[in-house]
Length: 348
Image (tube, rainbow, N blue to C red):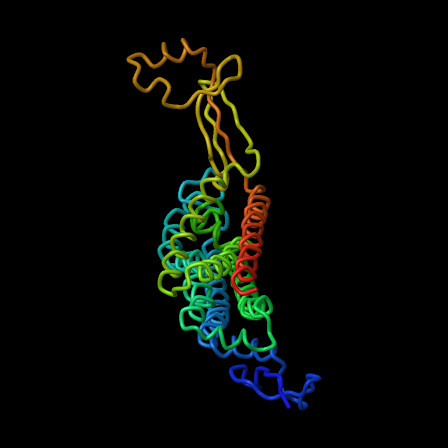
């Protein structure tokens, strides 16, 4: 009598099953065995991610408590190095001390969340499929009762859930810390590269994108080291490109002032454009008359009546973050669909 081969309880070898597919109680099915196998294969990286989340939460909690105590003791809440707020007079030394004491730790946390998606892409996404294809171990799995698409789903679902949980937790804890130490006192503003990449949904979205990039690259290249290099390059390129696009994701506000006036934007406003405006309302760059011998005559010849500052106020932070994250998640979905199409085309 012929038998049907199924993945065994350890997910790596076949067990005999009856023609009806009945299994002994407690024996994993093929898909369950695959999920178990994925957890076992990547338990070290999963453990490091979970440890990073736990350690990061404790570290941020301690840092938040100490920073808040310093701010309260020195009465520097909302004070910057150069502040126009009357109650901040004489607090410059305290602000400098705060930045020297807590600034490096804050920047380390920001840099960690900026690099986290790249690390996930390199050490989880890239080898996830490429290593199986390079070693040929996928052939054993695909001879079992689990089809190629279900195999790919099982291989990627658990890592995606772990990445989603860990990055969400880390981002939430950092946002909790940033409520105390962000903006004026620390000089770390929401629009900076490090802060924007570390706050809210942004690190979560980029981490899932890095996982998708690594999986698709692995399916196409089938070589682990090459896939890691391509994943690194792709993530750097994507992050740089979207950073350049970021100021234009929603309309900015504009402040206009005359030639004899001076405009003062809040410290937490993101200046994205500055120049002159003419009587007809046209905008000219600040450098329009830099090479002119007589700058005032040059400005009059262009019919300039004042200057302008285009900026994103602090209220634009979360809309910009959600818009960029939506773009990143949409790209993640596209890459995931492409990965499944490649899998179906190559393995049926």
